[in-house]
Amino acid sequence: MTEEAKKKLEEGGVNVEEAMQRFMNNDKLLERFLIKFVSDESYGNLVKAMKEKDCDKAFTEAHTLKGVTGNLALSGLNSVISEQTDHLRAKDFDAAAEMMPRVTALYEEVLGVIKEVYGI
Image (cartoon, rainbow, N blue to C red; front, top):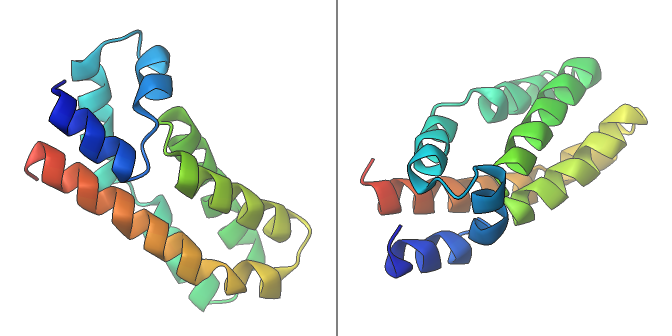
């Protein structure tokens, strides 16, 4: 991975050092999984569940997204989605719903940088 790519990923919310440790310092493997994240349906499913005010489904999707973002070391997004998952687990749908603009902004930021770095 080039220093430029690393810098852009870091600026976009990817903790590259942590991610590289998780992926055994294999930057090609990390790249493959970051690209795969672009087509992951968890976020879209979360948005749909929130629109439908389905707390249980929203919890499932938020929890899935939490796991994916944690494994990829998408630190900022993971932190926010973890908090949202806690609200949904406690059945505090309103608090979780209030977080959606932050979740969306961080998700779009990460997606944008992955697409930029890998030319998707």
